[in-house]
Structures are given as C-alpha cells and as structure tokens.
Image (cartoon, rainbow, N blue to C red; front, top):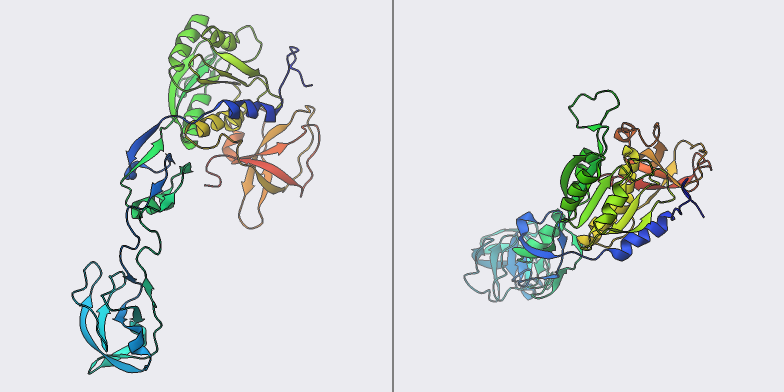
Length: 411
C-alpha cells in the first residue's frame, strides 16, 4: 500500500476519483433566454411547439402539380398562379393545372408533388413538364421532421450552436438549464507576489490563480478569485470562511507537512471533513478532497504549477461537471501513438507528463521537455498529458498510450 513520507496512506487515483463522483449531485436550475444558452447544460426536455414543417413544404423551386397529371409527360399544364416562400397559397390546383412555387413555400391544396424547374420548359399553354413526377416528390410533409409535442433534445446536454439551432426551430425561446457553478479560488503562501510585481529575495511570481480562473471558465464554471492569502491561521480562516459561501472551494498550496502547511487544519476547524488527503500520482501527491459543513466540495491542491493544473483536471473538473448536471465522470482519455519514447523515472507512482498531441494526419503524441512539477513554462508548449502507469517503467516509441487532453484540444 503506497504511503507518504509521513507514514500516511496514499489512495489510488481511481479511488480518489470515485470519492468525488459519489459525492457530487446536480445543482439548482434556472430558466434563461435561448440567446444566452451557449455552453450551458440543458436541465429539462424540450419538445417541438408545433409541427415541423408546419405545412406540406416545397423542397425545390419548380411547379406544384398533381402527380397523376404528369404521367403522360412530356405534357403541358396550365399555370394558374405562384406561391412565393412566406405566403399562403391563393387557390387550389385542379386537373391539368400547375402553380409556380419557391423552395420553402406551402404546397397549394390539390397538389401532391413538385416538379423541379430544371425538368420543365416554357410552353404557350403555361409550362411543359418534361418527365413523369412521382407522388410526393420534392415535398416535405407537415410534421415529417418533428411532430408537435415530440421531444427535440433530452438533458443533460451541453448546448453548442447546433443544439441551439434545434431549440430555436422547435420554438423554444426560453429553456431550463443548470446554474453555472461558482468556484472559489484561494492561493496561499508568504513567498508569493502577483504578476506584475517585482519579487524580492525569497519571493516568486504567483501563476496558479490566473491559471485556475481561466481553467474554471474553460471547464464551464464561474471563478471567484479570493487572491493570495498569507500563511497565517487567522488570515486563512477569514478567507476560507468567505470561500465556503460557494459550492466548490479550491485551496492552492499549504497542503504538505511543512511547518507552514496549515491549510488542512484550518479548513477542519471550519467544519470540513476530509475524504482523502494524498493521492498515489505524480505530480499531485498532496491533493485532498473533503465536504464542507454545508455540503461544499473542498479541494486542496499542491502549490507547484504543474501539480495544481493536473489535479484540477483530474478532480475539480469532475465536481464542476456534476454540479452543472453532467455526469461526474473522470476526464475523457485519448489513445495515441507515442512519437518519442519516455524514459523511466525513479519514482514508481503513476505519472502525467506534459505533452504535445497532434490529431492531424497520423495522430501521435510526444512528451515536452520539463523541469518537474514546479516548472510553469513547459505547460505553455503542451496541450495534453501522457499517462505513465508506472513512473519507473519506460514507454516505448510507437506504443499506444493514454493521453489526458487539456480543455479546448478536441473542442
């Protein structure tokens, strides 16, 4: 059984994700205008408000006819009118008659087919039909695509432009969606300064807050940055008390066993019950997950930039998905060919290595050069992470490997 250097049990990656999945339930819903629905998750089924099409519709420019009148083609028919798109037919068709019609226009009474204009010719009598036309040709019958009351889309479903198109066609001006989940982000550490500030001796520029704000938006959440909090018990307690007003809390740093790593104990005093503290994975060993006094999902992430990003994708994104109505499943994994082999490390833990994946042509992936979990720059050259089941076992060039994509890599 893996243990930390402090003798505490590290739980397996799958077990840690199971803890998150088992504790997440869908959050509240709200009704919004369809124009604001992009990226939201549908919460209720949407049915067609009316038959689609709402009438027998011409699918071609041409002539509305009675199919029986074309059997003797080529033949001449009398043209008795025209039906432009967006207008109602003015009269019915009788034997030997035709009406000029546009694509999308309603079929006039008595007509049961449309002869495309390409299969006609002018005639002194009206129009000459050049070929026999079968019953129903180039006509979309009323309700043939969707009947009134028929369900168009089922929840849960993330709404993109194609789904919004379907909802609009169904007549849904307003829909029920899950509320966007707010995520409180707290970065801790006396050594941190904000981007743009010049670090003094012993200080470093903080990057996790900006990263997690962007990542939260990419994952469909609403970030609430509470800034940098110093390694002081009173300051941490005040900040975490504010953070626990939100359904998800992400605390970054202070999760290990150093003398200033007081984040777990501070959160415990505020009523957080830890379900695990420490995961058998690299990077990200100190990652913790617990439930707050009001059911909040509380995550403690390592302060190293690579560890923070990887563990957010592995765990926090599951909670965001679950609260916004999606299944709280582990992230999707791709199987890609490894372009360049990966050497073994001394650490046997399962590892996620920053990588560049190419999905065009012959899809493949290769690890990018990095300098450990404290390196924030190698991520800029990566769009994915290679999963190495055992860190001390090499991955051979040409082998098929599991790849964790970053948001946006596959749309």
